[in-house]
Length: 527
Image (tube, one colour):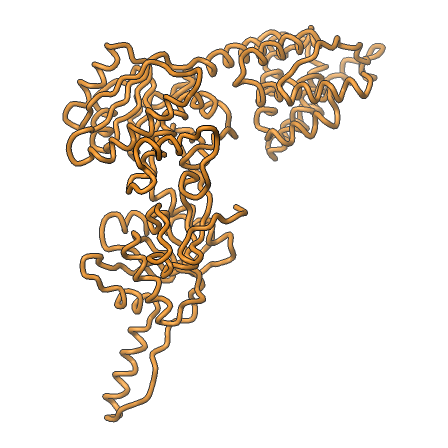
């Protein structure tokens, strides 16, 4: 094939276009010209198969696919050909997209069309029309290819399923009671994204749903035509729904439970799990803080958290992420937000209280006044705090007072209210934390969902800013879910982070990073 046609084909494939280029004759492999003794053919086939198995064991899947393609030339039985074709395809599906693209760019007909087909799968599944044209062109280029008999048809069907969107959505929220204000913010963010979604704006019904009526409300929503459920919001309702109700429509819960019932897990025949879980999990943030702090070069941590269930959850999540990364947790100290005493816990974390006790004991032993100053510990090189702004604004200055100003402080997004207040937040200068793109980055798009929410609901000064973003992402995720469920490396850049889906249907968030500078959050680059 001429070089310019190779370049055109690469560009067309990777940019979502297709070209109809007829397959050129393939040279007959040298080892297959003439007649080979049967023993030689068998020995050569066994060598290629052994190479493939060795590469697979070493997880070198690209070379494993290449070895299996060489082995393929020696197969005569249709069953063996089918099995080997499946293994080639499985191997290529374990190779990351960048490696596939590099191989394709180096050799457009690499692996006799297999790599090209794998790239079509990785890049074009979310655009059904382009996918169909690309597969038709590929079949014209490789009319006798073994993938024509099974894999191409599977890709067409997968593309159809991935591009099928719900026709009616039910939003289940506790719009009365203790969670009313939070639920209202989620609803308003969701409906703003729905209004701003362009061509995809399916019928939407909002239902009052709580832990007492969740089963009946779910059943009612289905009876009234919903084929996709969003909610419930509170954990008790989610626990009850998942335990007592067979989820017959895909359900995007707006909270997370640890133990997902077996009936709510995805079967091999299902593209989406019956239950998917999306939440602004503080534990996820604490684990990301641990990973970031360790990656930044620190390895000995102090932890300061409130003495309540929320603090215990965050300290446990940080500990898990920190020790998994390789860090050493020196000490965990708890404070009581109700007592307004922050000096005591800070002194305990820094071992200043122990130093003071030693000085006092020495004074009593010697019976005279000593001019001595308590000293803090010297082994810690990073501090993690879990605190809301009113507490963090007092904890951080105490760290400075006890001469720990040079020890970097990391926190979750909860230390920042979401509203810029340089005078109040100047005391937290230097604190590094992850937060939502909605909070840390300017609004984009014309008009953006964020600007519409701010204009219509005065959300910019609200304590529920993050829940407006959460609601907006709950809608914007819906057409993305099949792709996130199907593609291992797929992600979606949302208002609440870069979103992806784990094998159990949990939506995971990767957040950008900010740092308080002169009382204002500044977006950090890098990881």
